[in-house]
Amino acid sequence: MTSDAAPPDESPHPGSTHEDATNVNLKVEYPDSLSRRLLFVKWLLAIPPLILLSLYGIAVLVTTFISFWAILFTRRYPGGLFDFARGYMALQARTYSYFPLLLTDQYPLADRLDSERAVHYEVEEPERLSRWLLLLKLGSFLLGVVSGLTAFAAFALAIVAIPAWFAILFTGRYPRTMFNFTTAVAQWCARVTTWEFLMRDEWSLFARTSGVGAMVVVGALATVGLGLFNYASWAFIEVSLSPASLSDARDVPCYGERLQECLELEPDLLLVSYDSCDGVGKRVCLVPLGRVSPDLVNHLTSYYRVAYGLEVRVLTPSGIPFALVHPESGQIDASSLVSYMSELEPGPYLDPGVVLIGITPVDLYDSDYDYRFVFGVSSNDPSRRFGVVSAFRMNPVTFGEPPNDTLFYSRVRKLVTKYIGEMYYDLPLSSDSQSPLYNSIMSVRDLDGMDEGLPLGATSGQ
Image 1 (cartoon, helix red, strand yellow):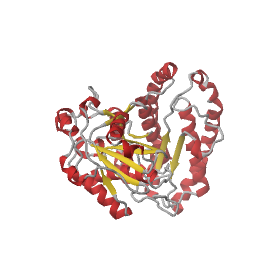
Image 2: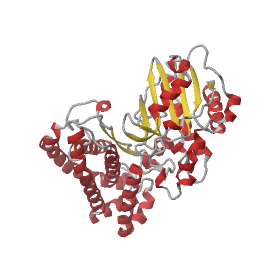
Image 3: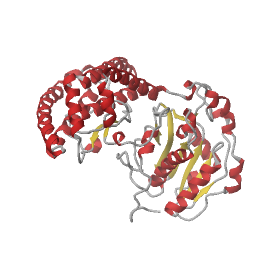
């Protein structure tokens, strides 16, 4: 069973899709276990790639100098030199993830296919680059702005790496919270370094700040320092935020005092529900678990009917036993909810022709993977196809934002569509963050950046 986890989500600031969210990406796959023995020799094994990285870095400085003049006169980054710099950034990401960050045991110089690597650095080659921003980047380099900022970030990463080393030694695992903080800061460093190497114009001091806005930011060094602090705070919030940390948890739907009402079944859905998922061939059936919005359910069924000619059947809604709720967090273990759904609908759950998807407004976590919360879980075992989607963190209202049903429904729909594509149409998952089958949904920003339409073709089975 796989999780669409946001461990953690970017909860408080969903935002909208923006270029710099997808043009530069650093993804590190979370390892199930890490070697205790390697902890004592990684520093030694890392010497060859670190030496190579230093020599490679000198060469990149030379090619960046050449590229500067090419961009100044042609507004283009020479293709071969761009690939050369991209290779350096990818090697840097793999090397530092191996040591000193300890995020992976994969040796950075090992010959692997890209799909087999645990660390992926991706940057989209731009068609045009700005001459004005080129001069801004030059000023940033000469003033040491980016170097100072990344040095500060490296200091934060070093602090996290020390307790992580001991955690791996005693447990064989990198604590998920520390892992997510480290990868968030490493992602930020990769984006900012990519900017200084002239490879992109989007400025990433903040997760969504554009290149034009950078003129104001870099123009005041005090603002830059404050911005770094804000980013670090944002990254920490992304790692640890729970609704309980909000100023008034009483206003959070399906949380605290309002949780009980969300565990009850939604009576209005009884009028549009079916008792069974019987039929011929593959079918998709939704199971409302708790007080799911009838408007949301009707929206989903209408969408799939219009977009794909797919009749999605809504099964009898059910409440959720309070016994499943974690007494401290007010969440429900995703595996426990799946087990409960299988008891409610044993026939569809065991039918290999049925894609069974539960929808709940309650927050979920995943004890199997130690995820503090998840958007959903799914299983595409040929003999048992099921998923559960939590709408809790997809709702802007959860984190104090104004109601926005269009955005809310879009997020839920994208995850349900991913599960339908995977389990009903047997489409492969993708590492492309814009794909509707993106396999690494870590935040609602990822959901917002995903495309909608499934790439259906002649091979898509029904």
